[in-house]
Length: 118
Length: 174
Image (cartoon, rainbow over all chains, first blue to last red; front, side):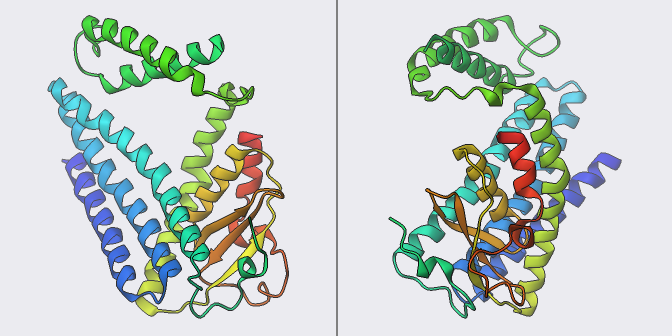
């Protein structure tokens, strides 16, 4: 009973933050601020939806259905991959767009503009 | 060279064991056939991929660093990340932003340390790492809400941007 409630709670939290990320993608003014919304919220939301899947898999595994074990372990691997690749991808997009000449909109300061990196 | 092959094989075998959990009854978790296949494939992986392991730096093999890393992940990092998400949600709803790109000098030496710090910065409150100066290790950080006064300094104090993260990462990776 309690584990099911936890699963629904985690799914709800995850959906809320993924939803916020999507809204942020529409509302923010330029690419950098959109990346803020897109990376942080989707990573955090995906952590919680993945945790819900992991708990579900472990529950069924504990009940004696050992075919549910890979559901839990593979989701843990996917979670680790998300945690590493999501910020790295955001970093690559931000760096590429700054080098392509996209200026941060409404910026009060831009130190990267002043130094010329190789 | 041999060390790199053995290390890669062991890591591949551990990954195999983790991925095939629940396949049989050995220790309630594994099937013996899976173990044999795992040994075979991890040795193949080690021989093929071991030569790509570059460098003489084995310090991350120290288990104390792993525990420190786990403590960092579930402690300060997770709290900062939760705060980051409420912060972003708040800014998405209200639209209050004051963006800018600042330069910080965390004084980390190794590539691993800088990578971990850049990823941590991206996932925590209001900051996104854009570029790195590879000579000095300086990071350029897009900050969604630049604090008043912080934009005047040439090199911003890193405590304002990412708190105690560089100190944690120095202990873990350097």
